Image (cartoon, rainbow, N blue to C red; front, side, top):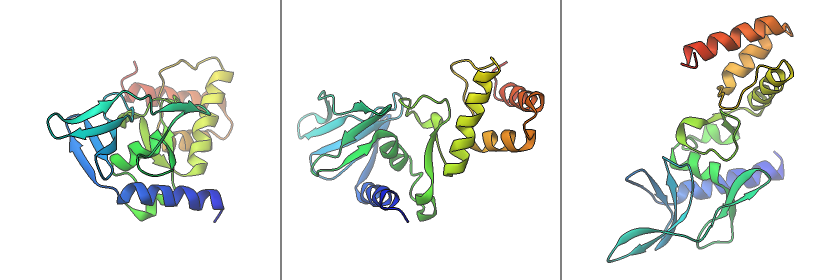
Length: 183
């Protein structure tokens, strides 16, 4: 196993070890009075502070920043930087099963900054590559439009079953989009 993958797994295991509390529209993760909060509605991961009088309050510290196209932040209390979509998946329980630790996070709508629950899924690295290949193919043939979202398993199936036949691929994409309420 590569050292990068080992480091990723250790970060996920550490995040899983932290207390998770469901509140309102999200999940607070951490120990102590300063924690991180995954907001289900916005997909953002700000810092929250506990105050005995007011309870949990979001600290406006711009703790998330964009790096290499993804939101990244540090975990309060320790010197660890994590990707916000990894925090989101831990908050959603997607990494609770050890068998999922070898999987990667896919953004269904291709927007790496959109970490809302309906846009995230775990998939294999290969499925993630098929997902990107599907987008490139749709762009190449002039049928891509922003806002389209595909599950990685569908992308893999469409690429493999179409066997390079563009018309077959486009029919599969059309059927998928129709069945998911795009038309």
